[in-house]
Amino acid sequence: MSGIGTGYDLSTTTYSPDGKVFQVEYACKAVENGGLAIGCKCKDGVVVAVEKLVQSKMLVPGTNKRIHAVSKHAGMAGTGLVPDVRTVVDRAREEAANYLSFYGDAIPANVLADRMAHYYHLFTLYWSVRPFGASVILATKDSNGYHMYVLEPSGECHKMNGCAIGKNKAAAKTEIEKLKFGEVLAKDCVKELARVIYKIHDEKDKDFECELGWICEDSKGEFRRVPKEVADEAIALAKAALEEDDDMDDA
Amino acid sequence: MEETPVDFLSIPVSTGTTILACAYRTGVVLAADSRTSTGAYVANRASDKITQICDNVWMCRSGSAADTQNVAAYVKRMVEEHAMERNGTGFRENESNDRAMMVDVRVVAKLTQKIAYENKEKLQAGMIIAGWDRVRGPQVYGIPLGGSMLEAPFSVSGSGSAYIYGYLDNTYKENMEREECEKWMTEAISLAIARDASSGGVIRLVTIHENGCEKQCVLPKDHKVCDGELEQVATTTTAMV
Image 1 (tube, helix red, strand yellow):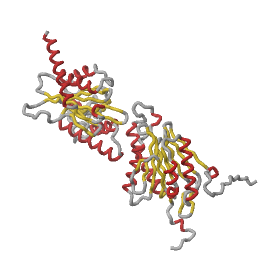
Image 2 (cartoon, helix red, strand yellow; image 1 turned 90 degrees about the vertical axis):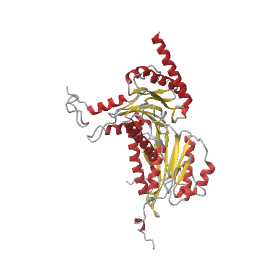
Image 3 (cartoon, rainbow over the protein chains, first blue to last red; image 1 turned 60 degrees about the vertical axis):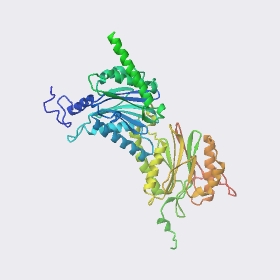
Image 4 (tube, rainbow over the protein chains, first blue to last red; image 1 turned 135 degrees about the vertical axis):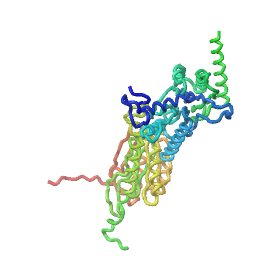
């Protein structure tokens, strides 16, 4: 076995003898150091949620967002290295705008996902660049309905009904698997995702903020942050559920 | 300059034309005459001015034959590329791959308009894009000389169009059935052929709907007889022995 320290992990341009590209795998590790990001396909849209780890008590609450709009009908929730997320979002915005001006129509979900996967993949091919240490959840609407895709540092792109990326993604996945994808309504799903974020959050970690975004019938088919009242309610419920769980544990 | 009999050699080939496209309840019909002229000379009396761009979108061409043929070729290439990116390797998600080359009509019109506008100084091309798609249903887009794009229930272009605007505006009906629409359009083209010197020949029709498209051809002997016109005599050819 060849692994760390054998010289095969310095560049994406060399495979290890057992066919791995270590730099890409390290990039995936970088993603797991970021907060948790989860998403769910609903009956009437897609909802995403991010656990934004807050590094300092002096940070202004509600700034340094992890959920970004790409166009009117697309948005991204990212985790991992924050600057990398921003670069990816910038590119997605460019792709969406380019497509609109060239074809005169909003970019279809699968085209945007494919183009973004292609962009990710480019950074796994040359020694002079570093793969993105960021994963994003892409939530979009097009003429075929609502869609959710997950993009990974390797350039892989999957269309998902439910997903979790970043810190503690395995634990989050088991929670999300319990949701009824495609049946639950977006306004109910917001509560579910907030609950998962609070449940999975590791108490050893510093403070965090729960960010919520959606694209659904309630947001008139446009990608938006979940309105404050709805988000506050969901977060209050999540906190209550958490305390209930703790009481159960204590009992 | 005095015209010599061979002057047509230096005059560009143009489809002095009548083209027409109209949406009916569940699809669209495109219609055109078949005369291609070079000045007063009929270069082709049975040309086809309705060009297929992809499975569900066709284009009516008027103006310079060379310009419009090339615009159509460019658009076709871009649309094919777009269809591959959008529909993947033949599959549109959750749909069978039998209509892999289905593209939004609007996208085809937009691409055509882009070329028409960006090259407006050089082109002599009036086009009509018409087709059917799953999202917006039957659609007709006129792309006239300057490179603008107008969506309309029906659109006419070419030299013959001037003679039939009034007829079309007065007799157009919304939500026609297919046969009614085809008949109305055939009649309109035959009226244009009767008055316009640079429209003539057969009437070609293309009908596009949910399940595909069909071509038809109406021979001069079957055209509507216009005011004071002599009825066309059906001719028979006897083989020489």
